[in-house]
Image (tube, rainbow, N blue to C red; front, side, top):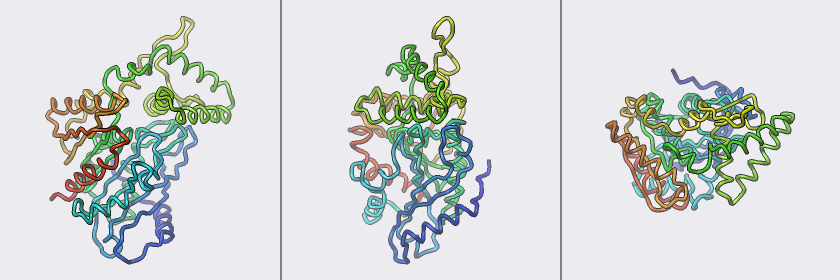
Length: 380
C-alpha cells in the first residue's frame, strides 16, 4: 500500500505552528507542535477527533542546513499523556534536553523524533485498526509518516525510519514494524505488553466472574441514551485510572484492549465483545471473543510464523524490559517472545535491566534506546 501524500491543510497548520514557535535561524534544536487531520481515524464510534496533535524534535542543524535526517517515531503507552515525555514528568526526562545532551556528548547523531498523541476516550490505543477506536495502524504507518515526510526534510526510506515505544506503545511499535517493514526499518520496544498463553486469566481477566461483572455494567450502560452512556463510561474510567488499585487499572486497560481487538461498535457505553455472553442457560463462553483478546497482544508463535520474513528485514529488533515489576506480563512476555524469535532464527536484541517500566525510564532512554537507534539509523 503506498503511503498517502500530505494534503495542503496539514502543511498549512505546520507552517503556522512553526511560526508561532519562535523558530529563528540559529543552530539550536526545537521542539514544535503540529496538528494534522487523520482520515484513518474518522468514523470511530467513541467520539475521538481526527485532528491529531504531534510533537516533533528537530535537531540543531535543521534550520541552518538543507540536510535530510533519519526519523524515530516514539509511541506513548496506554493512557500516557504526550507531555510527560517532553516536560520532565517521568523521572525528569525531557526529550529535547536529552537529545541535545547526547548530541553534545557524541553519543548520538542528529535525527528527527516524532511523538504522536495516543489518548482516546477509553484512555489509550493499542495502535491497531478498530471501528471503535479508529484505524490507528493506518494512521501511524501511513498518514503520519506521509505527513512528516511531506513537511520536513526526512530521509524518506525504511532504513532511515525507526519506531519505538513504551509499554502498550512498545507492543504497538513491534506490531507496526512487523507488519510494515516497507515503512519502518528498525524497532525498539521498551517494556512492551506481549501476552503469553494464560496471561489474562492469571490476572482474573476474561474469567466468568469478571465477565459477568462487565456484562452487568455493559447492559446498564446500553440501556441509557448514548450521551449518558458515554458519561457513565467516562466516570468509571476516571475512577479506575485514578484508583490506587492495580485491579481497577487493569479493568480500564481491559476495556480499551477489547475496543481495539474485540470491538462491538453497536454498544455506546462499553463497545466490546466480552469473552462470555448471557444466554438462557447462564453465562456461556464466546470462543471467538476470547480468541480475539488472546491474539491482540499475544499469539506470538502465529505472528512470527506469518510475519517472520518481515521481521528478518529489520535492521534492529530490540526488546528491553525491567525485571523488578509487579506486572509479570512485561518481563515474561518479552523473554518468551525473544525465545520464539530465536527458535525462528530471527535476529534480535534482548536487554534486561533492574527496575520497572517507570523508575528506570530515563536511564533506558538515554543509555540504550536513543544511542542504539541512532547508531542503526546512521549505519551505512
